[in-house]
Image 1 (spheres, rainbow, N blue to C red):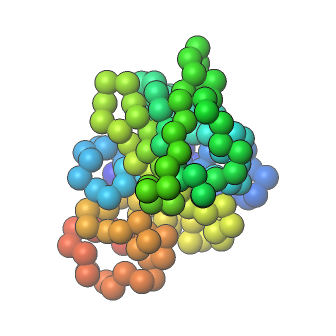
Image 2 (cartoon, rainbow, N blue to C red; image 1 turned 120 degrees about the vertical axis):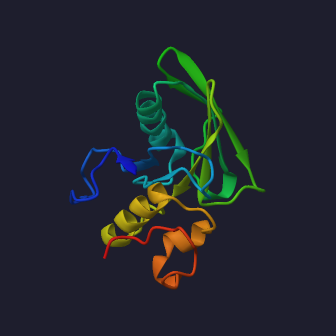
Length: 162
């Protein structure tokens, strides 16, 4: 089951202000990722505040720290102001470039697939849906390029909508 802050059936336009985020409703930590995020740019300082706010609201818990790949983002701040606190931002070269990790107060960290901003709407929406549908045994690259998946090659994996 998927919770999407932007419904998959809605057209996504470049100037649309809705956050393009999907989270697995269960967040059972069995999948490769817990959802996906499709930022509009690679500017971490501009994009992270809305992501942090949306995840805070969705989970009713505070994001405490963000971990991301240093070479995948521009303008990475050390901290992001959020609801009466400062969220620390850590950057690494050892992390997967298309993943972002959110440490949450009182919960296990959440791993989100980051869909490149330049991705066309159709493939991005499919990746948002697949990432939130359950990704046991699916690599992040397979979510970003679902045509590479062979039908039924990964047991228990939901295929993106046609």
